[in-house]
Every structure is written in C-alpha cells, then in structure tokens.
Image (cartoon, rainbow, N blue to C red; front, side):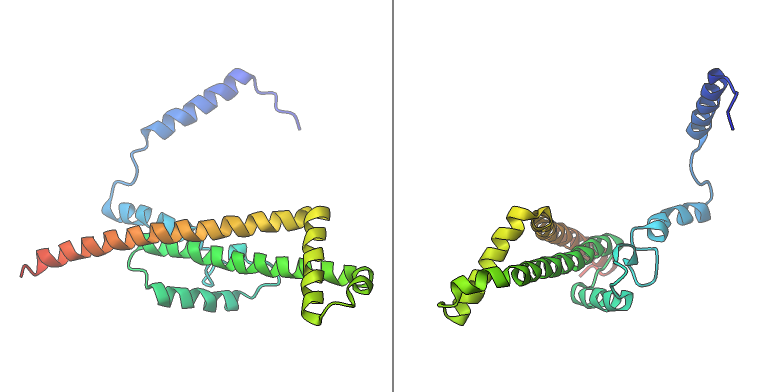
Length: 193
C-alpha cells in the first residue's frame, strides 16, 4: 500500500510532534512525579521478571539457579540504595557471563583435545601422563586459536568481563563511600552528639 501524502505534509507532522514535545513540562502533581521517579525501577534492565536478569539468561540456564546466585551476592554486598543495587546488578550479570564464558572456553578446548587425540597421542606416548595432558592442552589451545575465531572471541569476552568486574567494583565502592558519608551526615542532623 503506497502512501500518497506529499513530503511537505510529512515534514509538518514531524515538526508538529517536535513542537508538542517541547511543550511538555513533565508530571505536575506530586503523585505523578513519584511515578516518574520509579520509571527506572519499573522498566530497568532487571525488571523483566522476579528472577532478576532473566533477559540475559540462555535457554539452557536455570532462572532459579541464577536467582540463588544473585541472592548470594546481594547478601554479601547488602546494597543500601538504588545506585548500589544498580552497580551490584551489573556486577552480578557480569559474573554470571564470566562463568558462562569460562565454561564455553573449557568446552571448546576439551573438544579440541578430543578431536586431536588420535593424531597427537602416538607422538607423545613416551611422556609421563601429566606431561601428555599438558601437551594435549597446549596443542588444543594452539589449534583453537589458530583455526577458530571462537577461541579468540571467548578470550576477548573473558578479558572484557574481568575488566568490567574491576571497574564495577571500584564504582560500587565509591557509591558505598558516598552513601555512608551521607548517612553519617543524616545521623548527625538527627542526633547531634
């Protein structure tokens, strides 16, 4: 179905939408302002389900297992405000993805060792069992990184997640320090000793 409206009419509609948007001043009532402030909670990255974070779980990953994983981290860090919670949720999802990426790397290398075993084993039979396993692994790593972009991609992903872990924890520590200072000032105001 073709649209026979002239371009000038389309432009005027777009311009009218911009003009109407510019008139908006946001919620006027206190109740409306409170609802607006809750927008990030309601529509945030982790608001898609009670299991928190199901949006990035793979089909073969158990949401209940992730919920337990998340609860363990929440109990350890005990977030005191929404900002701490946000940083912690990012940290938890990165930790989950890091574990997943490391498991994928292990599976990739195990498969590479399995595929190479018949070709490699005759040449390394004279080595001790431990050295044979290390040799198989070394050849598997060399093969995976030479013949597969998957290994390189996993390596980059793991490195990225480890860096994200550090920066998220640093940011969380700054927020925690700020919250602690703010709570101290509030207590001084309430209870000036």
